Image 1 (tube, rainbow, N blue to C red):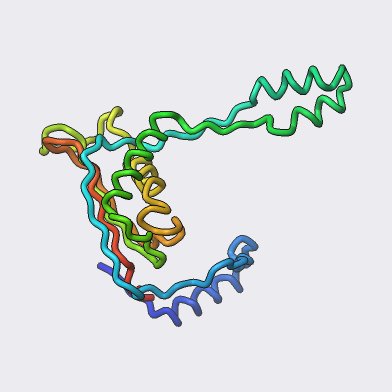
Image 2: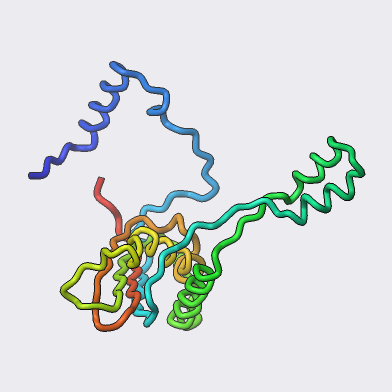
Length: 199
């Protein structure tokens, strides 16, 4: 059973709840807007493609202290601890995206760019649907430890398509994805202009 509360009533209920139990984190955040909000429904856009790639997860980037920076700072400081500290802070931390993630995202981006056939990325709100098919018996769910998490597969795909199919990742306003098994591995994606939403 679904209950729909009109927007005006919902605002009144929320305001009454805040008066009874004020919470600083519930106050409206200050937001600096660099670009206007868009209402959606402007423009027609549809991108649909199936990439014959094994779905992969987006691996976490690794941040580490660069030993070369430490060595250089030590040599240049001449034993002065304060100078060493200042020199070591500059460029000490490095972030590294795993090679497998980079290669997978690069392959997806290249395939998407080819499918776009020179068209410019869409600049309005978009809805994304994705299906990640892993090789296997179509009657089994891909939930073994080696199959990967759906949300991390989604992250890799969205990062690969950003700037290729749409201009900025903030434009993704709705998404639906699933993973399944089938006779061949593939990544299917459908991106369309988002219509106006109901409030």
